[in-house]
Amino acid sequence: MNIDIRTLIFVLGITHVIQVVVFSLQYKANKNYRGVGWWLLWSAVEILSFACMLLRGLPNAPLFVIFAQNLLLVFGTVFLYIGILRFLGRQERRRLIVGLSALFAAALLYFLYGINDIAIRGIIVSTALALVSFESARALWVGRQRAFAASACFLAAVFLLHGAIFSYRALRIMAGASVANFFDPSPFNVVAFLDAIVVALLWTYGLIMLLNQRAQADLAEAKEEVETLFDASPDAILLTRLDDGQVVRCNDGFLALSGHIRAETIGQTSLTLRIWKDPADRARITRELREHGACVNLELLFQNKAGQDVCCLMSAKVIELHGGPHIISITHDISRRKRVEAERAALEAQNQQLQKSESLGRMAGAIAHHFNNKLQVVTGNLELALAARTQGPDRNESLAAAMEATREAADMSGLMLTYLGRTSGEQVRLDLAELCQAALPVLQSEIALTSDLTLETNFPVPGPTVQGNAKQLQQILTQLVANAREACKVTPATIRVTVKTVPVAAISLSSCQPIDWRPLAPVYACLEVRDTGSGISGQDLKMIFDPFFSTKFVGRGLGLAVVLGLVRVHEGAIQVTSAPGQGSVFSVYIPLLG
Image (cartoon, rainbow, N blue to C red; front, side, top):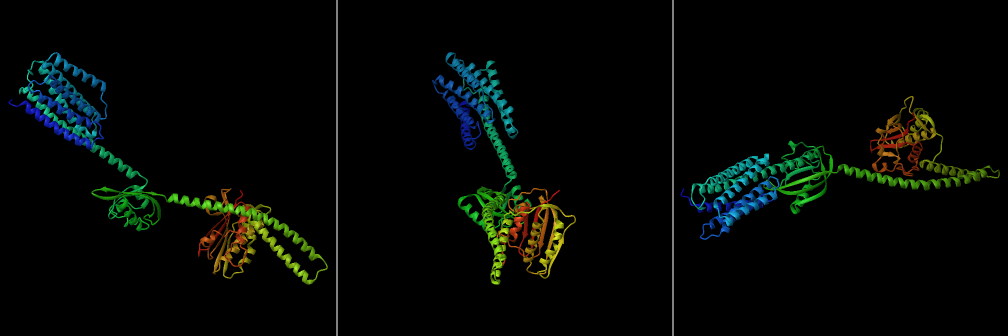
């Protein structure tokens, strides 16, 4: 062949210069992949090796140039092998590689400076290149993964071919092939350099394909992980266009929060879906995102498809996607937390009120007892004065008025003690229905004071059995009916009195008075007084059991307070359900006896 070997070496050098440029770009873009830097180092070392080959053609070229050329040629291939191992996630056996490299360098030095034998040097170099090529092929074959199996197999085949050519070259030299002149354009030399050029190009193509296939596989895996996290998140995640708010993608958390289905969500805008309680919130958030690019933990009020309000914390960020700005938002439903906080605040307020009531109760109780003691002294002396024979008519009238006022004051003191739950009275086993039936004449006389007012009763026989004081229970019933009569200002109206049993599970404990009530029985007897009167406003409903509170101009306001005290004495509770224009229901719960 009339091919100049120096020309082939120059072409080979140009090929590796292109490799250096290509792998520099790949390293810059994919430096997170281990091994790419070693491929870049291999290309650079190979260029130096081919430069040394050209220097061998100079007159009186030193032997060191030959040593450097062969050493760099083999070491470059070793660097390529290390890069492949690391790219595949394997670690090279450093001691073995260092030991063999030192042995190879020592052999080159010996057969260059000790015994200048070009044939043996050719055998050593060809054998080393073949071994490294075969090891590289084995590493690619063993370490191939499904994601880049095609490129790994392609590279393994190229390495096998390259190793086979250099194995053949070593065998030919051992068989006596002439290698006396390195630049001799013999078929033996031409094939070796053509193989180096072709293999270099194939290696470059195969390595880039290997890198790209793995990058695509990792990208697909990362995308799948992101999609999994996107769809599996319990929080609502929404991807919308910044300009018009059109929904690009949403997860199941958003569908659960909003109540919409995916088909009616994608392609719509957040405004047409009516997820904003106040549409001005979107304009405000969009303005903030345009100015700052992100917002964190904004408390907003949304509404679902059913029109129910949902209190949420929303964080959002502007991202570039599909060539335009988009908003990705993560919304966390805090409605339940808000309800718990509200309930906790209500319980704390109730607890504070209870503490105030207890303090007031202790003080009022002491005052009532002292007041009673003083009244007893006054009453006793008045009775003695009235019994005296030396009294005139005017004096007797004054003493009688004083006596009546004293009795009323004593009654007031008794009512205060009843409210505080300090009243006395024997408790016995009672049939609640029979008790209410016995009080019916008194109730009817109370109702008769108002025309067009109907009293309905439902007292089952036998009724529920309770432990209580008959007089006090009748006082509860009488007071509740009197209270209902006062509420029925617009007639005709109806008052319905019912005796029944109620399981604890059916009682709303959070709205029961007293607020510290803890049920003692699984089933309670219930005395219910229901009216169709004007109802009670929410503000008044919170105060109806306060002592001396009244919505009437006339009256002492102790009626329901006394009822609450008597309910406490019987270890029960009272529940009120009312609204303006919808009447009222007073339910008294007393422990049921077995």
